[in-house]
Image (cartoon, rainbow, N blue to C red; front, side, top):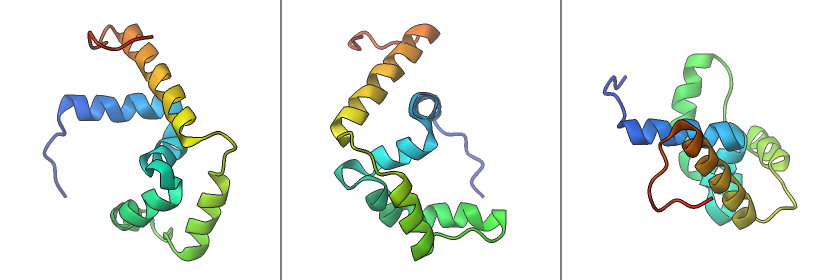
Length: 104
């Protein structure tokens, strides 16, 4: 296990994104235009190593299919990302940590 702390900006960014979009949508957006299926294809194995500590959950085909079906949205990925970004900026404003070039 790596016990080296993550850079503060990285940790803060992760929590802010989850605060405004939740982990499920954050993962789906992390997959870019390919959405959750693309995210799971590339990062699923790393997540699997974390899940191993939980007991029996796996990223097997039925689980990936179920998660991907549940992540389907009629809203375009670019729109979802823009909504998340605007909400994240609002969180940053509330915390007094907004970069000078961020807009509302």
